[in-house]
Length: 179
Ligand SMILES: CC(C)(COP(=O)(O)OP(=O)(O)OC[C@H]1O[C@@H](n2cnc3c(N)ncnc32)[C@H](O)[C@@H]1OP(=O)(O)O)[C@@H](O)C(=O)NCCC(=O)NCCS
Image (cartoon, rainbow, N blue to C red; front, side):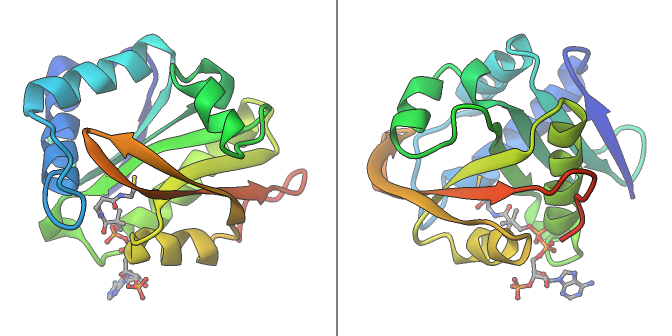
């Protein structure tokens, strides 16, 4: 499995696969967010336009098994709200993470978290932030193991689904991205 980073130059095919994973991950229980492949692709296009890092786990040159997106929180179109909710204004923000159901529990989520943090550090950031539903136990375990702690809690609507969200933060020591 290779981990490839794309920023701006993501092909239509790879973007579509990320959109498929997005829909598979976020429209089912417990989230019930209201996404279609088209609206998910539009959302992902916004992050590409904001020069986000797309980090893809690929078993071969054409297949995306899992994806993660990261970008400075100040560049996120909803950055002001995230900062108001507790995200550090000078942080690198973890926008989304999803693993195709058939590729889960193979370490891809943890590997993408780590690689995304490395991309944030490369861009000069030492604070990592992420928003996660308070009932997303799978991702919370990954985040806590990676060294994140809660820095904010609020109700927010995403994809027309209203739920409690946590803002989690990690301060990375200079030159150290392993956790
Ligand atoms: C959260 C999510 C991304 C995790 O992805 P993943 O690729 O399964 O993550 P990992 O494989 O690194 O870790 C998952 C579990 O598998 C375990 N695992 C990792 N490698 C393993 C292996 N080789 N054999 C057995 N178990 C393994 C991990 O220890 C972890 O265990 P835990 O349940 O005790 O925490 C995935 O569940 C998902 O896509 N969920 C829906 C979308 C979502 O919630 N995204 C995050 C919010 S944006």
